Amino acid sequence: MTIENILIIAVAIIVSVIIIRFVTKVLAKLIAIAIVVIALYYILFQWNGGLLNLGKNQFIVYDLEEKYCHDEEDLVKCNCIILPLKADIESKYTPEELETLNKDRMEALKIFYKSIEENSQSIKACLEENNSGSAWKEFMEDIKSSPLKKKLNELMGKEEEEFPDAA
Image 1: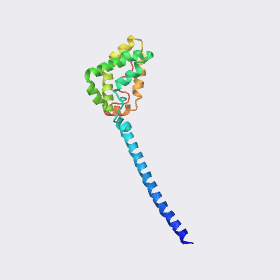
Image 2: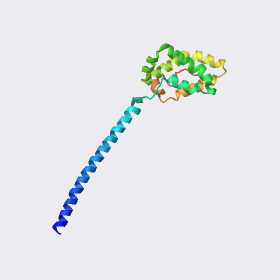
Image 3: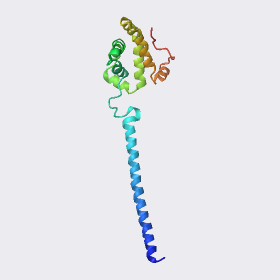
């Protein structure tokens, strides 16, 4: 081997080391940026309901109002179940209190279930007037299918089927 070949190999090794260092620095920065972006996304949109909230998280009675009060088939459920529950809850809490309560979904569900218990007789009477006794059963099945139902039962010290049932 000649000195020229040795110099070329040495320069190639030095240039390779410099390129590898540069590429690893760039990759490390890109990975760090990706981690920060993922963490920000999680905090802003996913963690604990998301800090940005984007108006999606509202008190359960308003969610149910959107579900039942915009469909012709569910107007009896709307008029006899949802609207009386909404009126009862809004008479007991200010909008600011509801907003605060909504941050604790379990507390919001507790309030909602208590309102159901307190108003179940008048709701059933309204449904009977409209010849729609099955609407109560359907509504309670929708509510009971909630993934938070078991946890709510534990918090309220209730057995599985202790909430007001259809007459």
